Image (cartoon, rainbow, N blue to C red; front, top):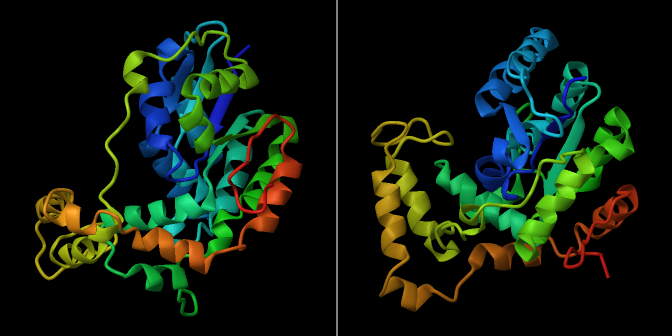
Length: 308
């Protein structure tokens, strides 16, 4: 019989890159069989009238030979939870496509407290070339037919309930970023146990190294203005186009903002987080409570709004 297939759908900014680089490795009993490129080409990019589940099935099959006993095949790409800059409106469609591709798959959903993930999402928007100030970004102003940020995307219970309806409650595993922060080894082992990975024997030392944080929030006014002069996914036609991958000006501004004297003067300011706490206070209480009732495995949501 084929090894179990685990599909990690995100969310964005929930240690997904760390998992892809350090957890989902063959030596950990997690065998990657598709990544961002394949997910984009065969799942998220095709027009609905052109989507063919057989193409992704063939891709998985081609990379599923000689899988060791006790190992688990993995597909990990946070784009499967939808684009958070535009409200993640396609997340339900992607879930249904996954059901057509691999109806017996196990699903991993990684989440993070909304009061922490929303500032991180905005900082990612800036990193990708965005130019809107955070109050405008979070306002999610939309015209007919044009999408923008929506807070509903981070009502986790909605997507998780939909995935449970498609794949079965017992086949949807929820992992918090907070559990990884508190006990990286324990959280990874609990995931391995839940999905039938008997080869996992512990994380390597390089996996436990703390990664460099993003640029500080107080740098936002300077970073987003730098984006007016550099090409990026969220700003493809800047005043001066230096190339899609050339982020020299952005990095130079970020470098300067992290260091004295600016870091000494502005270091205590967290304007994006402050705005999110004020603007979305109580917004996710009911969603988090519903999420707690949906999940059958142990899930520590302490620190999430609405959870005692």
